[in-house]
Amino acid sequence: MSDQHPHDPDQRLRRLLGEPEPGDDELIADPEMHRLLELLDTIGPDDQLETPPPGLWDAIAQGAASEGDDHDGDESDVDTAAGGTGGPGARVVRMRGVAPPWWLGAAAAVVVVAVVAVGALAIFANRVAGPERLATADLEVLVDTEVAGEATLVRDHDDLVLQLEVDGLASIDGYYEVWLLTPEVDGLVSLGPLRGDGRYELPDGLDHTEFSVVDVSVEPHDGDPTHSGNSVLRGGLVEA
Image (cartoon, rainbow, N blue to C red; front, side, top):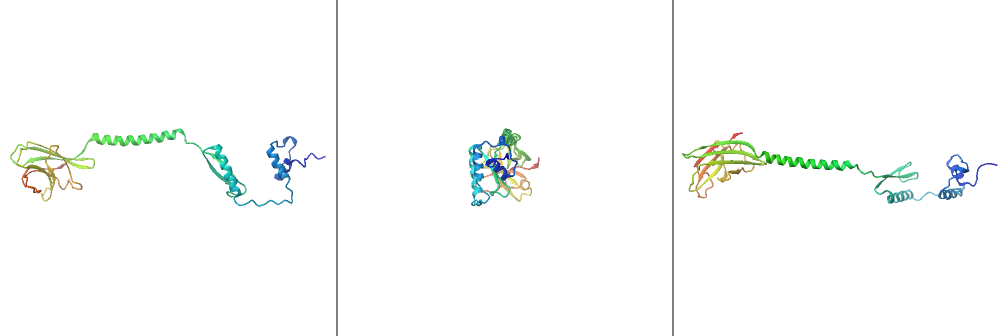
């Protein structure tokens, strides 16, 4: 008598798959597998398999992906298919998302702190260093008085500033005004009345190398904005 089992569903499946037929001790014990194999055993040689409806494989893949989301949390789907994505022979591979290493966040934090620190140091260094001196001028006395004066042109951040120190000016019936002149005295710009702080910001776009002469004049209260022609101090700026 033959040792084969004609009604064994495992034997039928292996015969369909072209695999060796095992002995009784190698039969699959899973009940679900047995039910599937029994169903396959009912298919005869004259039975015709129907073509699956369109979208079946996509629905199966989506169902598998949806079921896997309940177990895997944050994951990504990667479809690999022997005959094309979403067709017969396709399989859905679930790949668990990999969290970035702990040191990556720490490194990013260090970079941010370093950038902030560099910016703060640059601002601090600029403040500590103070304004950049560009030129100086010793102001000569043009009248018979005991007056001394000195002017310094500096770059303070983005501003050009004239710093003026004057001693010995007498009280007058009017006011003192500070000017910048060209060396040929064919152009002049008023920086305003003489002030106690001695700080005068140059107008934007003014070329200090062209208007390089500092002048202090006596001006009457007559409402005339032009130079009176009565200068008491004058000196040319020399590059520092």
